[in-house]
Length: 619
Image 1 (cartoon, rainbow, N blue to C red):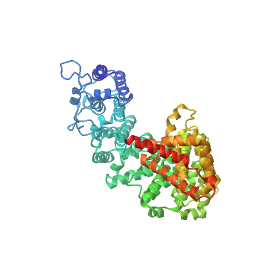
Image 2: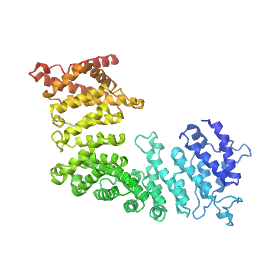
Image 3: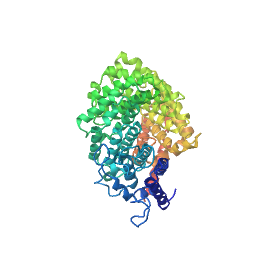
Image 4: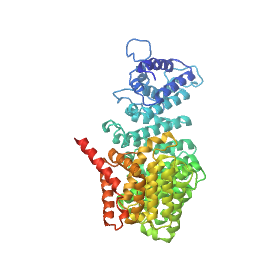
């Protein structure tokens, strides 16, 4: 990395090359170098500072013979085939590189160079050679991707550039215009994410985003989406359409919303696998939009076309369809939690059964399909109501769905697929209407999870299996005392082995793993029956010091952990420990068998040490 002072002479030299040298290859190479600068480890503060210089040489109006960027606005006028490209609302901090690239893409050349691209056309209508324009579009896309905070001031103008490009006859220019549009959309989405570091007043206003997309949909975008003669352009514009900010989509005119949905539903029947895959993915994005997910008809229409794509001959189409099915089932769960019984009653039982069967088949597919198919299965089994579970037509699919999840947890599939399968079993355990603890598959599910939590080389999978084991809300869901003892013992063994990582990269997740394991152990203790205490006491007698040590760390840290998803505060962990102690103490006091007494002693010691430590901290 060089400082801004080192980069300025370089960029000044490149600017000279772009303005004065006639050789197209040299000019393209200069733009490629600029693209490399703005894409290397972006965003870099040195590059950001350089982009805000009035001229790349930083010499201002010192009288130097170096051509400054102040010459570029002089080229601005009417671009061929369109109205004047406006810069009357130029941002306070001008970005010379954006202005340079825009001028190279859409404005006429100032003079004729002796190359084959000029022909005999009048100078007033001669654009830069295609290679120069394409490389300029590449640089713009890289700038938007790596330095959106710099690019956002030019949002409407860059959108106009994308539209002009999509209106042209050159397929390569059209594709690069669509790519620029996609990057603009993604930049806006990233900026508006809940965890975005960008201050609210520094983000692109939603009203401006609505204006931006309204202009795009009033321009050549719909035509490009439906241009079956150019499937690559259809694919790129599908991707762009999926990058609409959800809050902005709800602000679009109703006819534009309908246009987007109708086109995407239609493109899911395309014969081109690239187009079909992009359309399936875009619907998977739309189905989680707050303004669309509660529309039962839209969700049902989306489900039907996704199920069709899920049986496509192209692995890429099936992978995108499986991802979208996972998103759609996420929407079912959100609606179930927000709308309750009303949404569940409106959703077709037949369609739900079709989704369940399709997801079971998809779970046997390649890993890219499998990983999202098992995610969908977990959501679907969570969504089922008692009326479905009692329906004989659902009995076999439910059994097959659970077995598919168990098989994936135990398999040699990718860690992502196994992680998703553990997560899915946790979702299954949330459905109190399922006969968890009574059904034959209960023991198989717990066996798979306890095996993984003890021995999987990937700590993230161990974390998620421990999380699933802590989901059941009632003691009866854990089955017999023998089954409960097996789960408890497996969690203790996993706690002992929480620092035994085959791969050093896994070691950074060991704290998260212990957090989830301690949470699971305390959860089980808070549900313990008298018949469970002998096994608990034996384990504590044998491994009490280890349990006590890690439990003390767990309670003391009290920090939220992204990997576990537990998100407990210091006080919540303290309360969970007290709840477990009080529950077990109450059972021991009622017990008539002396052998069962004292199982809570090590946890009381943890609480005692923790309380003493807290008092010392306060003083």
